[in-house]
Image (cartoon, rainbow, N blue to C red; front, side, top):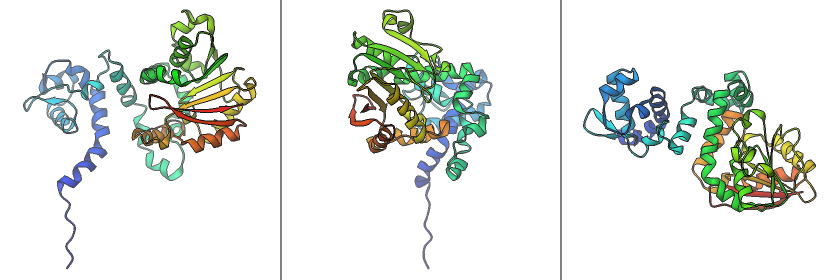
Length: 333
């Protein structure tokens, strides 16, 4: 008689952790527990009262989160923050905390993942079926959501601005396609006093452009233009697109790159700034799925980018790493 395999609790532990951690974090954020905890230890009963939650289940939630590495437990009924739970706060003044909360907390995000199984079956991004419109139209109809999302993007990319700007080799006129609030363009212009810049993005993304580009010292060398890169882009000597290509399917990427090829001056350079799927970073496969769920996009490897450039009529130059998570993938007209 063959013995049946025995499943012990130790082998189940990682499965439960991965399966439930997102729901637990979401509940803690929606209840506001990280902000309500403050900087001093707090009793569970007081925390639950302030949050308007059931004391017993609040204690059980915190016990589970502590087991996942969040919060520091001081005795059976008292908790304080640890380095991970500090990142869940939204009113701390810490940029990392605001970024984490900005991507984890939004109510509109979670229903998408409830459709993930259907998405894997069909190959179709669920955003439009869940929200009745595509992601960018959704942002246009929800200004506060757009503001929060754009700010989270700006803050999350902030530490990479200098390293990406240092890796770009630009002269003349540079167009930052999909540049959002303009933090990367500002970094480039500050390093290259002879370069002129254009910040180019859809209208909803240009609501809070960096003041230095509008009225500050860089305003004389910078224009801000609203438009759709799938239709046209301004003429220029160089184009940079950071985290733009991963928003789109291959055909749309080729369409955008073709607009750059058509509008670019002779010898124009096109810089795509992305985290390569083959770069070995563990978060990239997760971001790959996140982009699919939001906009039907994907992360790519170097060969895939080379193929996109070729289809758009651009000559592929190569990819080089930066001192951040990103590579600069270059092509020329």
